Image 1: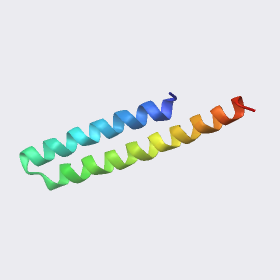
Image 2: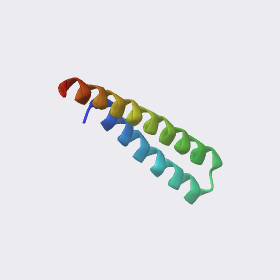
Image 3: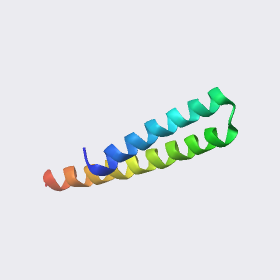
Image 4: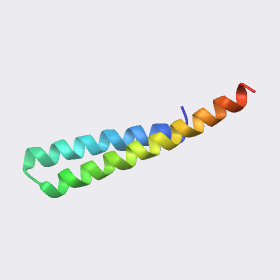
Length: 61
């Protein structure tokens, strides 16, 4: 795992938690912020996965 994969996973988890808190307190704003964090986290994790795939492809040459 690389830095982007780890940070992306953490952002995604934090976003899920923020979304659930927003649901619990009835705050649409917090729910949206949580969803935004999840999207950013998934994107960063995808970048990390891409980097890992490139690294693995170079090793197999």
